[in-house]
Length: 243
Ligand SMILES: [Zn+2]
Image (cartoon, rainbow, N blue to C red; front, side):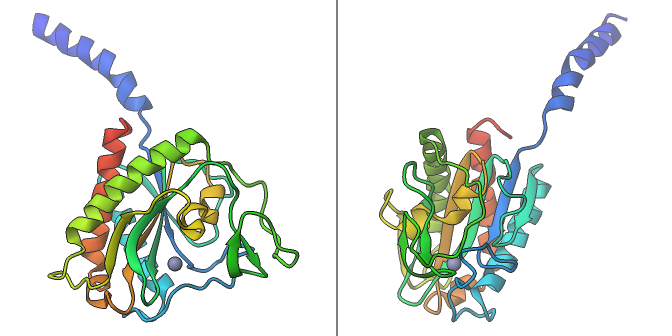
């Protein structure tokens, strides 16, 4: 009788905590995948991979990551280039890409201060923190990147980079450079990527998985890449106490 009473008491204490623990939301974006984001519609991505377009590689990796995150108990949501709904909340936002010829594998993250990037027209020319006279209109309101978001994003970027570095090997077909986490403000296109300003996710990261065509043998391994990146995101959520 005492055992039964104890079991009921434990169940009563444990049940509310279990019921109220909503799974963390992770937003996984396939870079450049249609529909596009106003102001960046001309940025259709790098060429030269085995799948015909960068967006198709990004979609395959995104879908693999989402499937594995769901299996791990994460509320994973796939995004296209146009972030919907505008200002969507989450624990983590990851944008998946590969670099262009001569590029590298690397990871960028949101940096506080400074705005999203503006370009000429729908995405031409040099990234600028202020609009050009001919910049196409952006959707508003943009979200902001606080110092706390930068810190959390840097932590996620380190975990993603460490995991990617572990599989970015010659044996797996990688040939381009591996730059790891790029320094803040070293690359406006990656440190002030528009996607960081279309979500309120606590952590916001962009990964260049490799560069086509040098890394094509590696880029073909979308399942290994998805498994590795999803594993890094799960480890990051656990380290942050969210999973
Ligand atoms: Zn890209």
